[in-house]
Image (tube, rainbow, N blue to C red; front, side, top):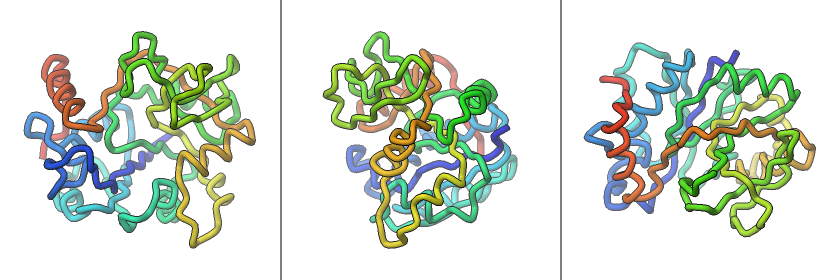
Amino acid sequence: MIKQAVILAGGKGVRLLPLTKNLPKPMAPVNNIPFLSYLIYSLKKSGIKNILVLVGYKSNKIIEYYNRYKEIDIKFHFSSVKSDTGKRVLNAYNYLDKEFLLLYGDNFWQPNISKMYKKFKDKKAIISTTVFNNKFGTAEYGNENNVNVKTNSFVKKYDKSRKDKKLNGVDIGFFIIKKNFLNNFKHKNKNYSLENDILTKAIKLNQLIAYRTNLQYYSITNIKMLKNFEKISKLKKISYIKI
């Protein structure tokens, strides 16, 4: 069973300016509570025992705030703001469990980790991603999707441009990853991307599977989406950790 969650929380969040002028993106306030606190609560509720936050931009804001929380083990690993998503994960290699859950610090979704992990093991994959089916166009970019998933659950294509008409879902993160797969990316000076390098490699090996879901996710990519999550969190009484 997965016990460790790793959160990508080092980006600048340019589309959330001016909120992110002095705050890292995951600390953007949702009803006066940092977005990250909602995410951590959902992970704790799902059975996660420890969390590794990959910080970068304004890292002290995250570290100082969550160092006070003692109900779950939260650690931090710093990478330069110039480091891409894959590079941030690789930099933290020595702190990763053999299998871990990796998620974006700006997407909220309530995972069923036991079901996700069962499919991951049944398919004998090296990476599993969570794919929102987007039946009603309620994803981040409306009806536009970014992945093509085959009937056997393996991902055929990842397309950030969202142009391919065969795309049939939206990658929302919540990856389960085997740590040893990261050994394929050893060039210390290369600024690896999670999407363009790590996921693409797994697709070429036919080893990236999709855990498909109809359960709505919420993003704080921009101010409009942040305000939407504020309304949803009130309406659905979504909980958060209290510090």
